[in-house]
Length: 209
Image (cartoon, rainbow, N blue to C red; front, side, top):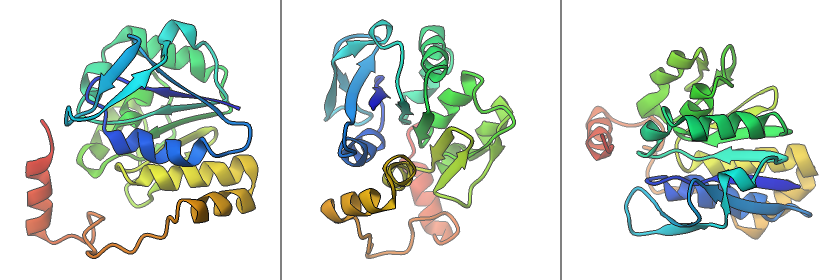
């Protein structure tokens, strides 16, 4: 199973690394990181780079496509080379997926029209620009072959959901145990509905324009 993960400047690292940690462990999985230019691609905080081993033109098909989000999403929404590539690969996929604001890229490529989808709460309303139906109460939304995850850490939930659908529940649970994914956060502010107004305002200040 070939998994193509798109990289672009100012992606959010956990959007990529979280799902990669799960999906790469599916038996028979082959992961390729691809970008407009070969080599290191910096994340949104500039302190981490992942390596694109393949150019977009070198990856013309995949069983699963993963598009991450991040502050760099905005520039991708008008990059026709990226959007054309997403459309071309989508034509070959069994699953086309996104994490966080990566769903806006899928939307800009015309893939989410009339479909339920989610994204980071900070940009959820933007899904309507692309004819999608925003769903802000679920961490993972599956509509046909399109699977979208809410913000950042929800990518792990997405990947486990996909693993269950692809390789079976037992394999997904074995991977969950292997990575010891058993969230017990010290706070309950991880969802917009649970956070106090002061915390929400603090989070908005941390959002990169």
